[in-house]
Every structure is written in C-alpha cells, then in structure tokens.
Length: 122
Image (cartoon, rainbow, N blue to C red):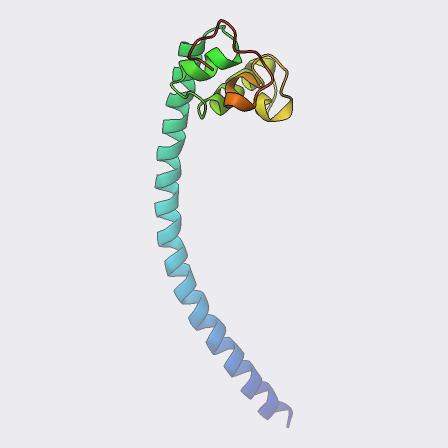
C-alpha cells in the first residue's frame, strides 16, 4: 500500500510542477530582458531632466526652480526634488512642509509661499 499511494501522489505533483516551471522559466526570461531595456531608457531620460532643471533653476527660489525646469505647476514637484538634493534630503521638500524655501513654492496654488516678484515661475 505504501508504494501505490506514494507513486500516485508523487507522479501527479511532479508532472504538474515540472510542466509549469518549464513554461514559467521561458516566459520570465523574455520579460526580464524587455523590462531591463525599458528601465535603462527611463533612467537616462530622468538624468537628463534633472540636469536641465538644475541649470535652469540656478540658485533661485523653489518656484523659480520649478519654472526653470519648464514645469510650471506640475514641474514644481521636480523643483522640490532639486531642492531636496541641495539640502541633502532624500524626499521631495514640497511634500514635507509647505512654508519652507523651495518647499511649497513649486506646488502651484497650494503652496504657502507668496508669489510676489516671481512672475510666471510660480
């Protein structure tokens, strides 16, 4: 009785697992290659955008940094990243506190920094 039960259970489990594993391995290899190529392209684009924002923003305020990157209201989030790198912080300053320099300035109308003398940068 031991041999009969063991062979029935063992054969069914091993056959199903081997077939599934072979199919999954082939599909995973193809998907991994495609994903790696896409990730490399995205990383290159992000690096170029950050360089442009640093050059355009210069030493200006948070709103000026966002506007220099060609962002307007939406690009202000990028200005937050720019200032976070300058201050030595990993997170975007715009999300953390609204009243900081370069924090709420690039968030559009939500920020707590005044727009006087900034023109269209805010």
